[in-house]
Length: 400
Length: 237
Image 1 (cartoon, chains in turn red, yellow):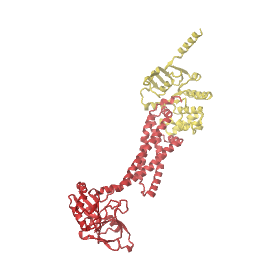
Image 2 (cartoon, each protein chain N blue to C red):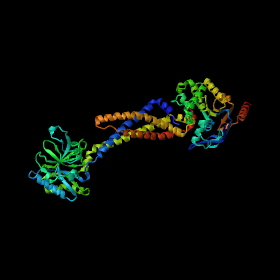
Image 3 (cartoon, each protein chain N blue to C red):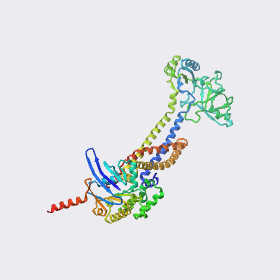
Image 4 (spheres, rainbow over the protein chains, first blue to last red):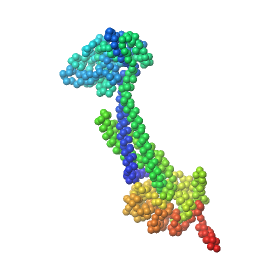
């Protein structure tokens, strides 16, 4: 039979140790549930689909210091050479490389600026007609660029056609009909000829990471970024001698070390990864300390109450009754701690929302942490409770 | 009520083997009030522990209220302790965090009585020892004599057939001791068998029968007295 009320009453007469235990459980619940929620937020962030096959892409930069070189001509030579390397699927000179944390963005409207239409921010990718193939993207509506769409510009000239991501199209034209429509950065209309399903831009933490626009324009400048799509198996070999190949075409430049896109992605999520690992360690430490606290308190109580336990055994308590007594006592303390902990969790989440841009904690995290804490408490108290049950009832007759 | 035959209790450590009780025989009839005396280390407490099923015998047979209790498991022994035996300890052994009502309630909860029956039994038991008005007090708010009366109420609440008292007046002054002894005598008159371990010869004499334990065995009192008289005579001669 459960002895909840006398155990609860006895707890109320021993407030100090109970308060310590309850506070420990409450703080553990608040910290662990919020930490687990943040971990999940970060993991979801890191597991987002970039829309790219990062394992097939690498990029490198070139700076041409030889002023006599015809940059546009050299660029065409470079691209032709790269595309001819066995194992290379395609290559393109591009103004920015996705997932690198560095690049170019701008605002676009569905109507001219004076209309006051909503500005949609987007990452801007400028390259020739090979851009989608190199990135491994395909159009889901409309068509890909042809070489006729591409312009070579030294100034701020804009092409007439653009391809945009579906996310950007949905924001500009919520009715779903973007193909053939014009959008505006300034006064000149840019005709949407194609839509790609999905691609993340350069800044993974930005609100418009999925809004990207491709412009078929090449600016022949001394500093260029080159993006290469190659077979996974051939990638390392191609990367190892890319510099030699480039310099063989023209020595009047510096070819920087190629970097895989997967590496860029890892770098971008480095702080998130660090935070996840830190929080996992913190959760483990806190749970360990809480388990130690529960077990320690139970062991202390068993030692303090040896004579009481012997007396209970003499009065008819079975070993199971003694184990149940300690389990119930722990359960009651944990329950009070959990009630306070839920309130603390919500307050802590509010603080994190206000100062650290976290979102509202899902109730499931509090529930799962609560169940975990109850189980942890019961497990931690089991060994001391078993040792209490093994106390001989004969201890009751020993002299004081 | 209590029948012990050829009981042996041996405590063993790595180095020493102590025979606390040897070939111990005792028969207590239903309704008897038996006092158990003996010098320190004679085996009184061991007898009490065995009689109260707080420890198990090494060899021998023990029947309590017609039940052979040797070899029973923990659950069975706990049930017999709870239903048939009432304990009164020298140090009262009340639980300090529980009030008088809750203290008396402890064995009744293990018995599985419903709350109405428990309440009735607790109030009657506390009434019987004159402490019904103080059932919400904690043990620390009572005198030693009062605490022992609560312990008696706790022992009586389950209406046991057999009461085991371990130096029930050992921690009390003479007035309190007399009151507690009178209470035990009243309980015995109502039909409860009592075995009381005591150091006090005056208290022992108030029981119907006195058992002397010497060196772990029941001493034949007549033979003991004769031997003692003969020894004294020889010395004086």
